[in-house]
Length: 187
Image (tube, rainbow, N blue to C red; front, side, top):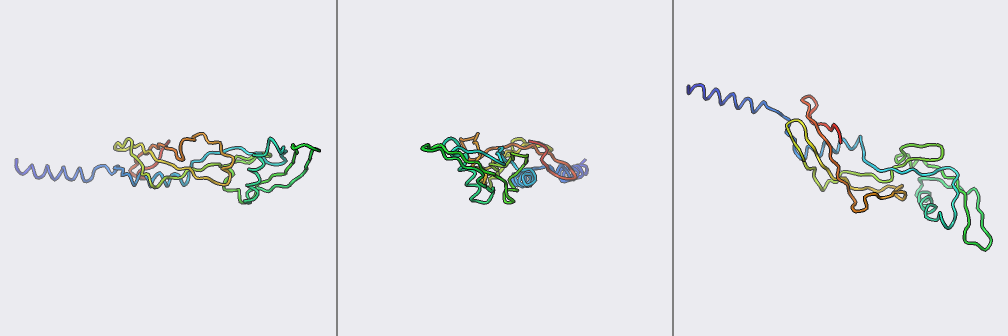
């Protein structure tokens, strides 16, 4: 009987040593999510008008200022088509031809004839806040990360729906596969 105990212990050591490699560490989870975000970025978008746009100096002053800022930074080109000044009136109207430049390409998601959908806010992984493992079973896990807001040139059109903070939290589902290891399978 005593001869069977060392064999049994050896068997237990072998089983635990050759067991499941599906242990997910916090740093590994952060790296997996960072790689996933490179090919699946998180952002917010807005539609902007292009082409021939009429601005009134009073009511459209803010919208005109946004386009002028983009023009000054080289993201759009603005050409004044018409200008009407009313005699003894503060309300004048301007018609501009607005087009996107090559510099705006990284932010354009979809372009139609007189509109474009652009990224107005991008979210990047907050490296100061590590990922938290909400549920780490043997082959599945839920990982929550913090993404901080990163502004770009088109942020002037951003309508902030989350005004209480400059970050968001997002939860991803990860699954373990023996051949490929851990991978993101959903949000």
